[in-house]
Length: 204
Image (cartoon, rainbow, N blue to C red; front, side, top):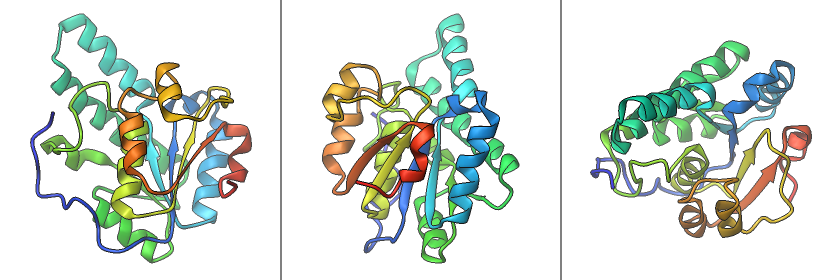
């Protein structure tokens, strides 16, 4: 478990907006990814949580080759999400990066969509284990809880599953192992989308 930081447990009040996790694996389909990012930019306010994609895959490969511990791999994976945030911004310049929940909340309050870079979490957080049990899926739920938004959407390249129970999704490997715990702590709706139906992001 990571060490605690000064990040407040929750931000004050509820934020009008949606957290959308966009899987880094979508980089294999530039046209579709650009369309998703453009929709986020055009229909604020959305807080985008980027997956690590190929950058996270490189961390996994390096850990396996060199025997790095999970804590270091976790911090490198957070960096991978940050690099993917930069890629997303390069593909959709109307989006900007925020490096704290407070900065994300400020952007949403102004009606602007923004991409979250979780670099601040490298200092550690009591709620977030430094292991592969926590990936961008769980971090999206964590951010949604921090912001107090009423919806968290996961957009993945994999086919949308019929089963939506968080525990079942984790057992199937569709989400990370910590996802059910973060889901239980989130008061809003959790929506799973494939990239082909992202336009339905506000549907139940």
